[in-house]
Image 1 (cartoon, rainbow, N blue to C red):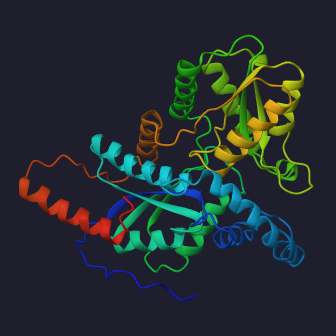
Image 2: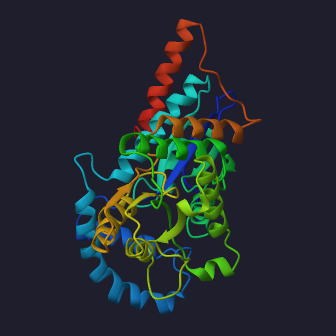
Image 3: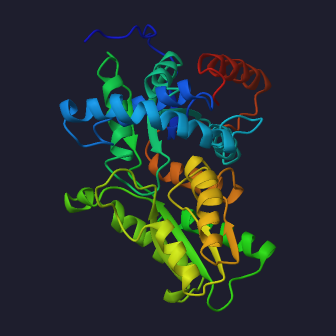
Length: 372
């Protein structure tokens, strides 16, 4: 494996510290070709599909990509906006705002954004950070609950790129933040803000806490995802002072014929409607930003299923996105994880020094592709 070209090291060169936010990714456009390219990369990840390559490849290329790409493209078209992909837009906002919040706290570090699948890739962003003499990187996967299918896959992508570097930066990782008080507080505020607009749940109504599903086999092999989802759900319900019967943790986005984590979201909603539940509010705490799974699968498809089954009111609660409470929680999490690292202060009274720092900051932004 050849090593990438890196900026020449010189004694006295100031080193930088950065946070690397990593989300799942999104197609570049809501068309079949872009979706097919995205799905090919996503479903080729052995962390995502744990089937031997020689068995999986014919299924992926012969059945799934030719048919699923067009169907998925239509779904992406239903949620695409003038700002493009909701996941990309909100992820960029999170990176921008996190940099600002850290600056307000007196911490002068860079915040970069990468996608595990699609662009900007983890590899390309790591190279840009190294070009800016970044020597300390905190990797923050935007998956609150750890799973080998998501968080570990981010670690794989980072490790693959580090193997090409001669001067490897110091690395730290955030494995999960499913029970972080700031994160739980942001979820609570999100639900409370929703209730302030639409009224609190009444007796017999339900708060559905829906997470992305994974195969049950992953749980049996030791993946902690199921337990962390349950803990997030419990802590959120407790913070809202809900009785156990007022809420239900479910799992969505089942793919294939194998058994996945249960109860499944869609059948649970239909059963609730059949049993006389008139209103459900659905929140998806496992998604840091609104995306296909929240805006189309929940807000459109699940809503229609519930209403067709006899339900009367269905509300999809927005993801945390660029919520100030959530960004503040992320800033606090970053500061905690970076303890012991040099944390340059933004408070410098010398005007000439500030102007020089501003010039350097603009140069870093250019090298990072204006991601900060």
